[in-house]
Image (cartoon, rainbow, N blue to C red; front, top):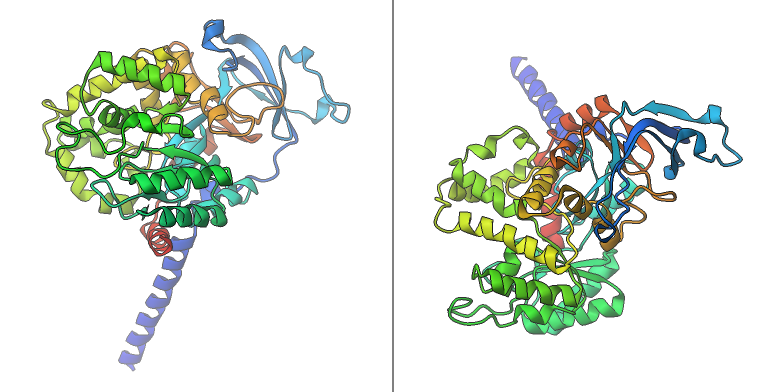
Length: 490
């Protein structure tokens, strides 16, 4: 009788465990549950408005001082300025508008992170909680396109979302398990065709890509109207490259090949300067990139965080917010954490971090369009809040706060083809953040907005707190299931 009771208890526990695993592997944080029907019209009153619509060539933009108002109808900016001067459509009465008092704070476009790695839905909460209303995922997995559709259809709350396909690379020093490896032209064309058929419209290429495969990828992408971004391919890396021998594929060979964005200023220094910290050579290279027309995603924080971990002997890994890093990634990256925690950054990495700032300023001064990206979701780059660290580094590099903010708003919106986002203007999508202080004086004030609007849906302070909590609700089973599906699909 006691044995039967024991077996019954074990059975109940097993069933409960199976249910828990099923929920953990398929669910998502409750904070991302779609909001109930939003009002058709919302007017945000008593705010200063930073439109981000003015170019630097026209002079530094000033914030429109309070009290200003901005009207949103059906998720789209209808107008802004003095409340009495905002025209209403014939089918909308003043009594139909829900008014929100902005408390004299600054209203500006939501931020766009041009380089992230999404492993789990919980990360979406982190982005929204910190005012990031658009993300470009840079390593496609099977769940990303369905996730994009769920966000677009309003079945889950999240930032505007675009993604590349799986990373295209060839065997070599920088290959990773999540890369789709191709060597021949036939393999490369088949890989591009497969990604197109799956629904991807953007490709990401990586540094090992061999010449034959690279040529085929660019040709096939052009035929199918697919964009390309990523690391500039180096080809086969022979012994002695880059210090004693040049790269198989010179950096300049990627210019004019249709890159939407070249990722990582450190990769540009490595490939374009053969890892020489030469300011004059960087100025010359920046002019070449500007003449060619590619945009650059500096991702300064990606390398800077490596240095921070090294300088703190690993303590930086446990800073506030570290619980939003995907736990599966932490498991897989444990060796990397240990390596950087034990490194002395002074001889090599700290000087490079300083040079990457100079290289970024050289690109900016040459007229190369910059877009803000953070490599969030990799190493210890926190989803959402890391955007503030990136903008702080851009200012440290010599950009003004306004120029830094441009990289995460108007530049990213237009270059990455986020539809009608990145500026405050009539007809644009109502992706907005409300911040304390003046971001033109201190970009750091954007990190914890007072409120966020995504597609006309108002997320107040209590909702943002809920999202910050939701960002910690990551799941190893959920992430592992996605990783397995990714490896199976490559």
